[in-house]
Image 1 (cartoon, rainbow, N blue to C red):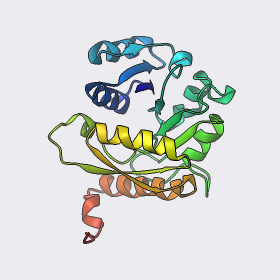
Image 2 (cartoon, one colour):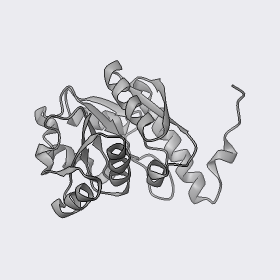
Image 3 (cartoon, rainbow, N blue to C red):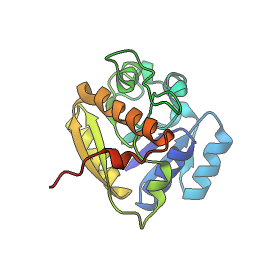
Image 4 (cartoon, helix red, strand yellow):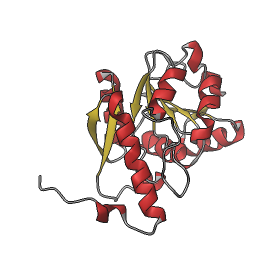
Length: 207
């Protein structure tokens, strides 16, 4: 597949690296063309200006900080329909750093905001719970990647990309349930910054 990456931070770099290892064609763009070129040269991908990242892509990863989402999607042509019909992967965490409270409006999710900025795109929430290094550690055990989305084909595409970096996809539901999934990130982040292992706060349920 051809995967467009919007962003040049840790998560963008990790997933670009993992997907390149799996044989995918990676196109990278960010606010810094030099940073995009550095990642592309390292993994054998291609750097492009942000408006050209989605051209010909099968999926696009939006891997930027929450406060940069609107700027990046606007630069990528999202409001004008440039991401229409694409699987748009949303790993963003709209949470207050170190506290974990959501910064979105009540009853509204980050994915809702992203979908509104990219009409016609098939938004899939995924990859928002694990640190970026998890996706470039080949000998790490499999982890479950909870996902939400409305489009079955987009969920299949993202599920395949999850497996390509050692994850196990698990669809929680449609975008109506994304807020719940994003609250989980706030729960995990809040506990982690309080010095508590989040896994110790989740009961083990027999299969």
